[in-house]
Amino acid sequence: MKYLCFSDLHCDTAAAEKLVAMSENVDVVIGAGDFANQHRGISDTLNILAAIEKPSVLVPGNGETAEELKQAAASWKTATVLHGDGCEALGVQFWGVGGGIPVTPFGAWSYDFDEEQAAEMLKGCPEGGVLVVHSPPIDSVDHDTGGRVRGSQAIRDIVEARKPKLVVCGHIHSDWGKQVHIGSSLVLNAGPSGVVVEIP
Image (cartoon, rainbow, N blue to C red; front, side):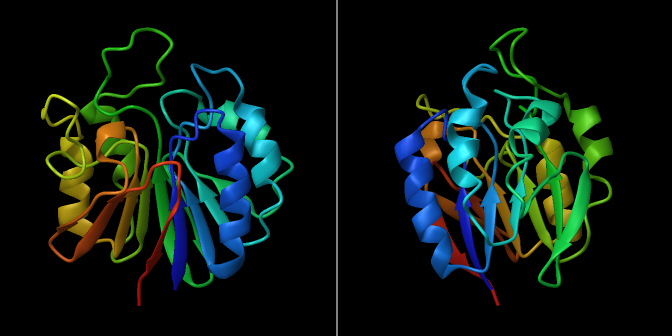
């Protein structure tokens, strides 16, 4: 199965257009949040991405709420927005949780959740599926420009427990494009350029 994974478009319409073209050569598209900038401009990219015809799984970032993303993606007929729930696409089980986890230092505009809230939303994650989160698991692809780890313990705990084949995240811009393994799980901080991953 070929997945086109991306995150953190932040209203970048040129990146969105490139992703539409890239989607023609994959099976499933995964968008790991931050389509908007502080709740503004979310439709800039979503209106372009709506041309993607492949099954697509999206989660909100910390720059938009789940409701804002659902509204903006309403015209994207093949897209499913997840936040504390799951879906199936082409026989693969997906689970998604968006937002900044743990709570970010960005203040009231940021759509954030603490580790306890995150653990509750993650507990339905199926064994061996695909986990889509905006925030990375702690001590993985989550190193900021100062080298500090910024990821989530709750996300790492569920990855270690449920062993998803693929974990797609974003959020920490300095680790865009990086991949690591946690056990047998491939963890990808996707970034806006799009990364194609093939998982048996």
